Image (cartoon, rainbow, N blue to C red; front, side):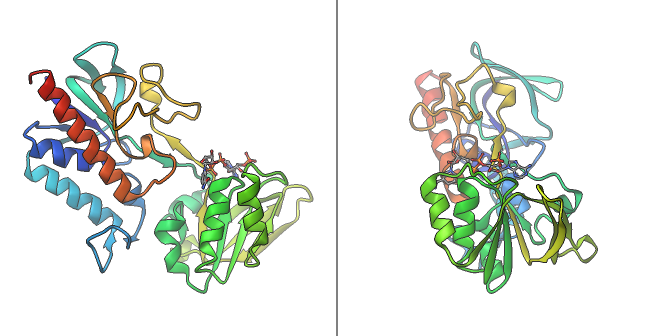
Length: 307
Ligand code: NAP
């Protein structure tokens, strides 16, 4: 029987592990298929407090994991494939092995939605990014492309004009999902060039391990052309990793966990941390803070239950 099982090993999960381990609760962390979370897909993180020179995303998350390990946190490879949260102790199937847990911290994050091009996947971290806040700074004076037609794409395009000399906003149709105000703000920005009814067919140049441009196609006329760019940002939404808990805890229409205040979920003894609940801030530091909150709540819950 585990006091705490933590699902996910990004910033939120590892911070929850650090706090619960230090509280002597010997947490078990299920790493998940994207171990290290979204930070493991970034390069330099310059906005995590305490690192004036910046720190590499994968190093940051590995450091927190080590720190948690120093206090006895235990890590297991793989993911939770089945869960029974209908009664306590909770039961979790981790790659075929059932574990029982008095409390559960869900920190399984959200995965960026990608276009699905092979070149895109190969160039992630080498000019292809899903986070303007994280990586925009590297494109000062450069040409940047943002893909998407929702609020995230508008927000990222606007933000990226602080750095880029020109920002192309590529959207697959004429109509936008973005709110009127965000769309208008982007339209008024003289450094954003809209390319509507346009799809990305290829990102160059995998052989150089660097983004040099893209091949675009007009979805209406079929016209194909190349556009040189240095940075490529995909902003077509995120998918929270909650499918294994569907039907057991309250999720919103998009699959994000609905918070019941603090780190509480609709199930007593199950807590949330990080992007699995947060569609607004999505930062390493807010995820770490949320991991800390979930750990403290789990600890108090166990104490109140007499464990
Ligand atoms: P979203 O609203 O779901 O928009 C996703 C966009 O990506 C859509 O325009 C969609 O095109 C496009 N898309 C999806 N798959 C694609 C593909 N395979 N190829 C090309 N384009 C694709 O996602 P979001 O912009 O991340 O926003 C998510 C939620 O967060 C929304 O509720 C939004 O309002 C909120 N948000 C709010 C703010 C803010 O208020 N400051 C900022 C960011 C996000 P189609 O339209 O053609 O489907």
